[in-house]
Length: 247
Image 1 (cartoon, rainbow, N blue to C red):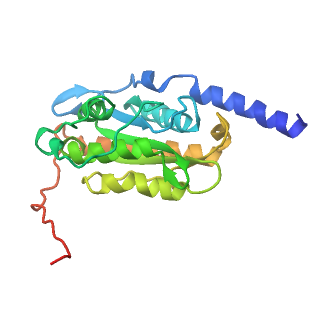
Image 2 (image 1 turned 60 degrees about the vertical axis):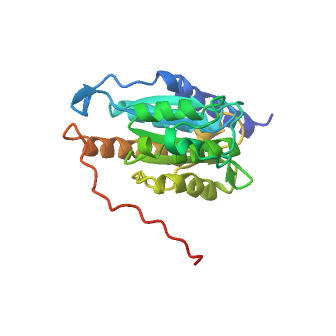
Image 3 (image 1 turned 90 degrees about the vertical axis):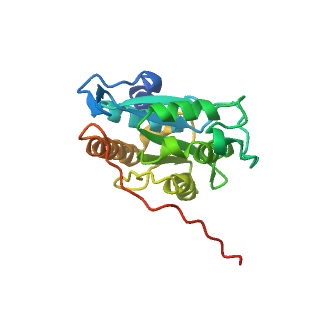
């Protein structure tokens, strides 16, 4: 190992240790409670990790968001996909009337339950061939169709992680379902992209992690504005008109 490689690995280990010392699931805010639906409680953001690597760079980026949210008085709860199999949607429409996916042997209905208890969502994914991990994409698609009622109006953000390229396509793809659910998209100073290949390497991406922290600050700001009066006043919307160009 040459001197440059030694310095790089030492910096990665130190930075990753600082970022990942606290598991995401235990990152809770112990600051000012924020009024919500006339009950004083701390608001919560659902973090969905679409990477099979539980301690990889996607987890590192989400952990950075969780820590920054906690500084703003917002709790976080992690849903880790890991190596669990996720069904694709089979267009059976069972969920249309029940609000529950017909498949009860994977994480979809658990994710719906968590989303109903949370006030916002951040989904993260590594870049696989210029696309999100297929399992997280299937999960978000099924959640969006089965549980639009518990996703509506809640702020959403996406985080893409990659070694070199393709992350902008992942970022855009992850946001598309949220834009169809009347969910405010939380932005940052740049696109929420973090670079890193080997485990912990993303800790060296100073600008990427700063972008994640800025996004978390913006999400906390938006949540406080939405729930400033206790019970949020959402816009009154027209009845949905679905049209087809095939006549």
